[in-house]
Amino acid sequence: MSWGKYVFGALVIAGLVHFAAIYAVPRVLMNVAIERVGAGGANKWTVGDRVTQASRQIVRPSPDFAYSACAYDLSEGPVVISATPWNDYWSLSLYAANSDNFFVIDDREAHYGAEITLVRRGRDHPEGASMVVESPSERGIALIRRLAPRLDAYNAAKQVAAEDVCASVAELTN
Amino acid sequence: MLRRILAWIAAVIAGVAIGLASAWAAISFGASGVSERYGQWIYNGAAGSTAADPYTRAIIARAGLLALSAREARYYTLYEDEHGRPLSESCIYELSGRPLDARWWSATLYADDNFLAQNNDSAHSVDATRVGNDRAWSARISPVRGDAANWISSRAARRGFSITLRVYNPQRDFHASAESLPVLTTVSCAGDEP
Image (cartoon, rainbow over all chains, first blue to last red):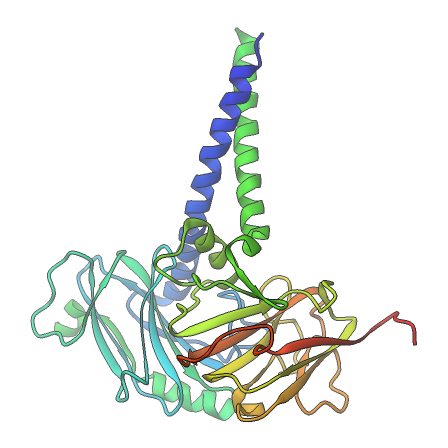
């Protein structure tokens, strides 16, 4: 029996599995993160507890930020996302299903907070929307970071975060 | 016939095993291949970028999911001391730096599982709001604070922990180098000669 074709077959399969795994890892990890962030429902902000040694949802959290996260889902149409301003550094960032950070805006550009309408790439932009951002994927994560290294700052940031909006346009107009 | 079928089954199993093992190795140990090095600091400018290649994306997703793109923030990570040894809870280090051309920075300790060390010292990081960004500074990295003015607790961080330097809103003239980034020095390790 010639072993050459079996060895060749094994190497071809190894190559295919290797590249499939490399491609899949960020998508699988993002999917896990989307499921965790969206456990309470999609298109809804969740204000994270203060980051401590018990924070184990997302790798390498910074204890110096107050985080708010929203698992967005554009399957029912555009989603409105707003970030209330904060008295120190803050930013609103968007992550696609493959983990790419495809949008970020911070307080240098948006002194008075930010409001965007998120649509699926290639879809019609809603009329009247001031800032439309196209998402390369139907699902993803919106994240607000507010610099709050101390407990009192975190508590204040948590109150500010209650004003943030993450909701589908359909939900807002009903 | 049966031998052929068994041989193909073995080939498929071997192929899948080799493919998965090589992908795991690339993601676990491939960071240096897609990163720049400044002294002991490892930096990947493609973190979070929409232009990241599949390997960078996979490596970052495992160790730094939801990282910001380089325009907003830069992430530098130390895994080794100045002698190339893995960072260890049994050593005392000093991290010293100068002001950075950026709006804010922090240095945070992570255990080898990429989460904060399992201690309740509330000393996982130091940042520019606490030590200032207008003068030279230093922080002790050790299991107990002692007389350190600035302290990052390595208690329960075991061996193989890392320090991540976050540099937010880097200015146009911010240039990372071994000289401009903080320097880690080993003060002592348990078991060293007195």
